Image (cartoon, rainbow over all chains, first blue to last red; front, side, top):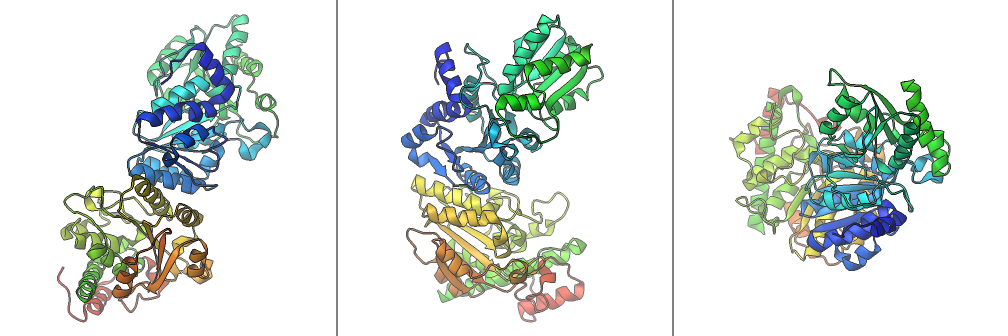
Length: 321
Length: 278
């Protein structure tokens, strides 16, 4: 594993989450572990070529066949490999039942890596926008669901998920040149949220590359005299309820922000836990408001759905005033 | 070969008897009796001399893997596992009872010889392709066998697997298609015509054996065929409900319940008039 420093983190942010995950982390993991990588005709765009050339026997391209992607991965996992199976996040919905039976029910050690989730394939249009994947994967028993905030975290997440022998859905967001949340090395632990900034009034909870907008939201609100905590909840399942307890005890309002439908994602996960508590602050769930929209560039799409920092700040203020 | 044929035929008869008893004991829940009757000889042949396995060491790395993709054939599967020694005959009484390990579709349990939880059609075949790739790349000599139904071949992922197995030249993979010609809603040719499977699979790059799936000698000959560089498909032409006259070729017996009188008639037909003590 590489020592993280400012330079590598900057280089990786240029590569984006996917190419850092497959181009940097995966070849390292393959040096010491019995892993296999399977892809549904998207290996090269994922930056797999370095791994494929070094470990040709550990790579299986199944063609454009997502159901078979998961089935073949399950067979490889059954024979002892830790399998990283990748396709575009939206197409993981096509093989959802395969994931449910093989990963959830039978528990095969397959890491389903959904690339270009959320609005990463912006001008590709709604057929390519994965805004329901967290909801679907989270509802499957035994699945862990992780959404790294930047390329460095994608690198750390790849190593971390390879250390556990259970199925995981890794949601990779953004494209190349993705924003940096981290500039220093830090301790990444599955199931442990990270407080990026401490405040006293509002807790803003996000994940994925949209976290960069959440950080900007906090700056806007701070200027208006609202003190904000910012949390990177990179693991949606299992949820870090210990951290949530702390946030609920010390803030007046909880705001969850996600590049996902408002139904079934991070906001829902937080709300489900909050519903079990007798005394917890109010929550605003900000995300895609359960609709499809027009195609456009990434920032245009965020604007359409009210997900830019200014809009998140405005929505938050409308609840606090 | 003659001795082995006799052994397999006896096993198939024993399995059919168990299966009828299980169906009868399942009472009003009933069981998938028709699609089990069609593959009795196939499974009996596999467990009596074709598959390498060790009941005392069910996870033996060099064992042949049998994946049951048509998971609704449990009456044939569980009873074959009794013949093989993985399941005790008395355990069959728990079939479809609350909390059972022997459910209406198999649940992965290597100690009982069950490799995979099937029931969702097509899935075990995909996994078989992955297992065969794994064996090939690791240089292991064991084989992977998959039992599919012909109705199951309606599933798109089955054809993804046919393609992938030929692409990766999986000559360690054998797919047996229990072609009984019927599925839940009626005749396969009426519901979704599969056309000429032999030609289709040959065109997909498979070696195809098109045989009588109730002929034990034909099954054994096909299983022992040596094929290099491509996967082997055995199209086993069978009769749904085989062995019981009122079930044969009748789609209503895809899943059914047996009355006392039907049970007795069925048992008499299977055993040639002599009730079998199981």
